[in-house]
Image (cartoon, helix red, strand yellow):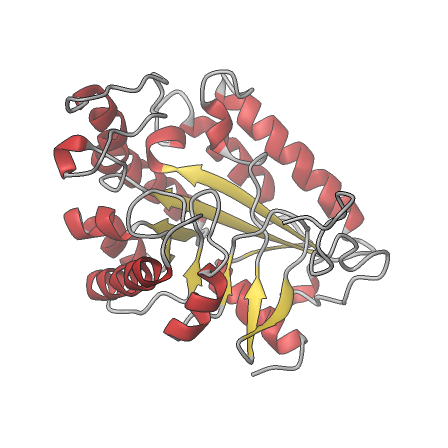
Length: 305
């Protein structure tokens, strides 16, 4: 929506905190909080073999098979569940790092271990929709049912209700309100516009927005997206982290690192994550935290329980 003359709608905040952000006071005197997010989508991708209306169009082959099942695409995704999950869990365990595993409901319904194993290791399991699909344009009643079904499935698999949400690509205009009305969510990550969380009011309730990022993200291993060698990923992420760490000496900062089981979990790429973990663990001034812990800390800093 635009106003006459091409002006953005008045509800769009392009200034944010400006020069004077709030004092995050991250635990242990850290100036920077670092969030690792592992996207769990294996089994939730669109597939004619799963009864969907079409096949997923963006596996590593970047080809769309129409009118017939696509076992090539399906096995690209399956690698993450069969191998990548365990490789990533083992690496996090080696460094004593806890992450947020952002799980699609249908993936977990088909393979409960995708959520149960991270939860058993102490990682957060958050919600990433039912199917691996955007919500933009989704009818409100459908979206409400999708959110409820995802919550129920993740709760059954882990024994704990998810408190965080992240939509693939674009949410709908109703998504955030529906999350609040569903009850139990304290944050979502459907924003890419800041280096700090923020607190908003939705339907009369306080809600935390934790910004996410597509640049410090293994999705850039996709053809033409910039990462080829494992070192490309680690160098880029370390560069971003070191810059934010320097800024955080005077201004608090947050950084997100996006991962995917089928992507960083490949043997030629996993060393990029290992190099990054080697760089950040036991480093002063950095709080590595699950997203639900960051959201709860932010609520406390903003005067909420």
